[in-house]
Length: 265
Image (cartoon, rainbow, N blue to C red; front, side, top):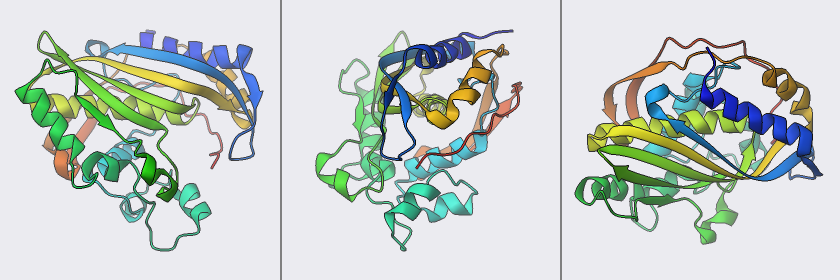
């Protein structure tokens, strides 16, 4: 049974394969790139995780916990077998484990301001506000980061007792990064719903530079031709969003096999 999330994602893959412009990039790999795209997902249709290839759910969860903790040291990731930041850390030349004031620092401590706490407080006390926003693009911090934020902000919206979340992403690594981003923000939305006692509404992703690395083109073409399955559900328990401490189970996740592709760092 196909699902709308996979169909939208496959359309993005197909568009880049057919219309992408050749561009250079910081990794030296090269990309095919388009500019501007949006994915919208109704959370009532299931948890937003792709089924046209297997997504490393546990790795995504570990990274989100790391963000929520306000952590910026790679040790937590490595202790939990999450290797997606290893390449950027190695290129940085640092030996103290620090990645600079990346996502967790931005979310939890900008000059003493906890944006996550402010967000949750605002959603509860003033749900109709248009200021339910978390911003990770602190200009004076960018040069201190191992990698500036690819997904640089997210905004929440409440209507009819439902909470929706929209994130903005300047750089969308379509084959490897975006599947993680979709599921990560979907899980964040569910955690925020638990804190605010709202029902999940819609998940929206806005992408700027939407690209496929040139060593991902064959893999993308393979995924385009797969049919999706019904989306799974998740069960959350024992959660503390501020400590990045929660148990989550993916229920009835049916997917095609993973498609291996090299990381470009």
